[in-house]
Image 1 (cartoon, rainbow, N blue to C red):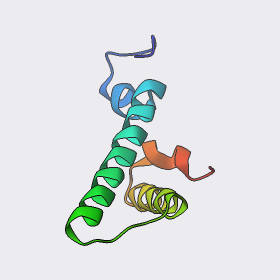
Image 2 (image 1 turned 135 degrees about the horizontal axis):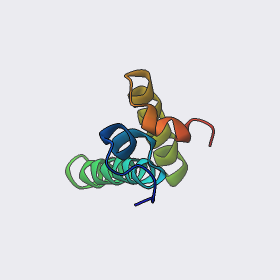
Image 3 (image 1 turned 90 degrees about the vertical axis):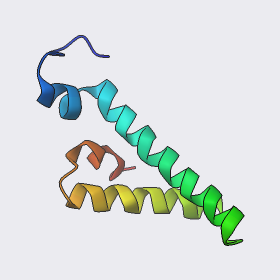
Image 4 (image 1 turned 90 degrees about the horizontal axis):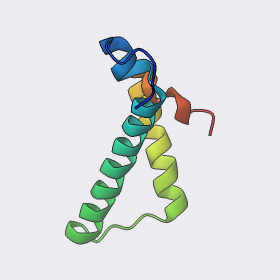
Length: 76
């Protein structure tokens, strides 16, 4: 974790660069897991670029709902 204010919950869950990257990784892993399930159970398959766009769209939806932590994905 970063060496900044690790005792404040707001910093730990929202402002910490380490935690922010962790949330991004969790979202990406979840979307990859859903893609895996779609391929196995529905024989549906997205191309890599489509999956990346889906991850960005999901992040935008979370940001719209208030998850400012994922806002770092909007500009990429």
